[in-house]
Length: 87
Image (cartoon, rainbow, N blue to C red; front, side, top):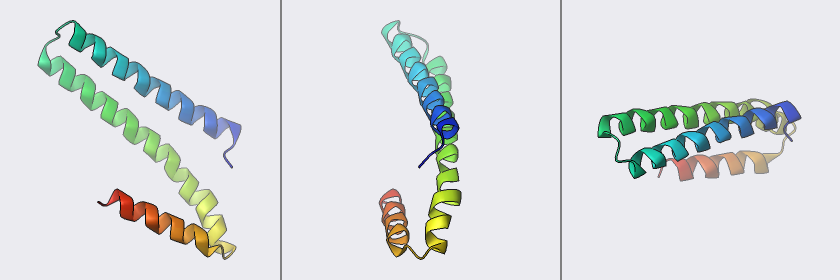
């Protein structure tokens, strides 16, 4: 389970990404200069990476706790997720 503070941080980060995506859509609709769109696209990528870093705390906390408690299914789940990400 995530704390309310963690949940708010994750949601706020995704709302920023959502706003940036809407901005890019508007730029495309208004036929903005390609370089400007690329810059905004890079900003979206950075924001998604920041979101992913926030999620990494879940691994440090919850998954580590489960491993210490001998919950092997958590390890199996983590390995399966990593395998999917490496495809």
